[in-house]
Image (cartoon, rainbow, N blue to C red):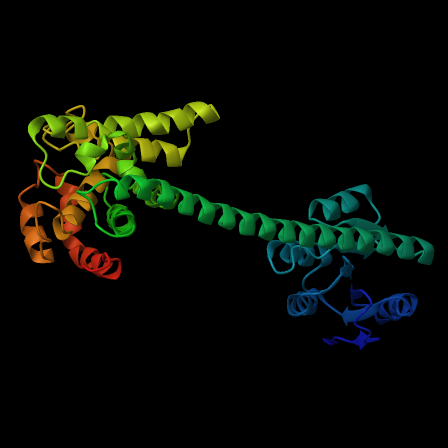
Length: 376
């Protein structure tokens, strides 16, 4: 008969599924277990699989081996192959008493093997042991899940604090620079979002796919605000000059790329090494003024010599400079900025990176509008 019977509905007690095709065996086991446990019954392997699948809180399965249709071994194999039932402890309870029979049952994933005729004392002891172990595993899993959540929450808090500190440090450099944005940290927030948008768009490109992983894109986003951190080392007479810099002053200004790299290298020295965040920050600070044709600064790098992080920032930084008001020029419109950027393909900018920029230029315009400077 294909039936499932539940005896004693107390939800506070463990639930055991008895799987056996012999009614006398079912009655015996049910009578032995009913005072301490809730029991469910299946008379064949197929029904046992259905009940186990439908009962996520099932605590233990007592499984006969010799049954018509699916025998106990195959039933156990399928239980363990299903993620929904794989964690349910199985005890074989069978008349097959050869060593190889027991070895096969344990190899299939059973936690114990009891031979018939059943000794009540042995049955109670073995069942209690497995339920105690199951409870301990569940408590450990719950503890680990709580601990993981605590770690995730703490990590998120630290990441938020790190981002705030980075923006504060970068803003110090921005506020000292009269050539930069005139209000707040809009330039920093825009450029880091431009960089992320470019990186996400380029992640499927064969030239960049290996480097632009999810983790690296996140690091690029977080390190981008430090691109001009080296300006803290530039004299105020140059940073605060109300007008274009002369040639000598510009040579001094160009040193901010070196100062930025050196500042981040001091951090790396202090912690005794580097990490992805500091590596990208150092690359961006040092090389985002390099140009694809080698005419940039500070090292006149060209082409693939320029780190990808810096090539992404070059596009983001130039676009933002064009659409922002400066002491020496008004803000360009988005379309005017596109016209200027287009002329830099293959000279100022990596052609593939610039092509990606034009493919998502509407995203850049959206970011610029969302994080515009006050009064702009």
